[in-house]
Amino acid sequence: MDIVRKDRSKQKVIKRLIVGLVILAFASLFVVFTFVKKPGPVSVDRERLWIGEVTRGSMLRQVRGAGVLEPEDVMWVSARSSGRIERILVLPGAIVTPDTVIMELSNPELLQETQAVQLELNSQDADMLSLKVDLESQVLNLESSILQLEAELEQAGLEAAINKELFEEGLESELSMKRAELNVKQLKTRLGLENKRLEFTKRANSSRSAAEESRIEQTRARYTLLKEQVEALTVKAGFAGVLQRQTVEEGQRVTVGASLSQVADPRSLKAVVRISEHQAKDVLIGQMAKIDTRNGIMDGKVIRVDPNVEEGTVAVDVELLGTAPKGVRPDLTVEGIIEIDRIESTIYADRPVYSRPESSGSVFKFLPDSNIAERVSVKYGRTSSDTIEILEGLAPGDRIILSDTSDWDDHAQIRVR
Image (cartoon, rainbow, N blue to C red):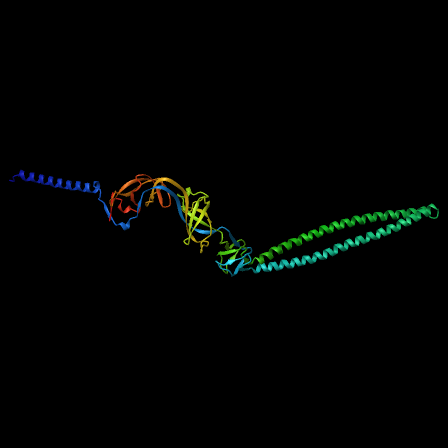
């Protein structure tokens, strides 16, 4: 018979209770160290940090963007005739005059059509000459007939007058007198009809000549157009400047109106600077700017702000003022700084990384006379290209870390070595 030992059961209960308490204690410590206790200062090398100082004073607001130089006076040379490009005589970068031949095109069909129209025009000119001779001959024949009738009428009038005198003297019969008078009357009628026929013939000949001349003018206009198209196969610059680019190659076929080359005046350049769409809202026409050409800085003035946004930026045209440095040419990459305005007597600092205008954030501020920086909340105001206005959280003279501190988001302090 087994005997239950009460002291052994009691020991097991006590042992389990102690183990549970130990586990609970370790879990509590883990929670405290993991979620309650804040990490201490993290040590960072000075070379990794960009440190700035808060200042009170006049803050110049600027926006900055990259861009290129573009000519203000540009002319595209387009094809006035269709054809195949036989030769390209001038390459981009060459200085050209209006009469400089850039390239030559070929179009055998156009040449053949031009020759056919020329022959047709020559034939029509010959036909017109023959027609004029025929029409003038008709008029001359009618005028000759009229002259003959006028002579006959004059003679008949004399005979009628003589017969009338003889009749009055009784030497001629009344019938002869009336026959002579009737002859005069008939000749007058015939003369009147011939005169009307002559006028009608002249008007008809004039209309016929005008119709034929109109047909010839149409053929001549067609020939002139074809001749101009043939001449246009020799492509000229048509503008004094520098040949910027060629958009075609030898052997390529082009149609009428196709762009062939671009000629620009290198003396009149403007800067097209692309500004972030968030900063472009403050850019206005007439604001002054600085254009860095990498070979000198030029003054400029905003003359146009593109109303459209492209890939998050807005194009701003800046007129260049003064003499351009050497080496300045179209398509040169430049940097533009546009002066927006100036804020007098404000607190500002160099822009910390990821800081945004009219927003709140945090930065690490150095404690007085210490190499330890602690995280503080900051409220920002207006911004410039490299500075930002401080509304709350910092005071003039405070030293802050401007570089990226996202690697230490879990730390409230940074110790700078």
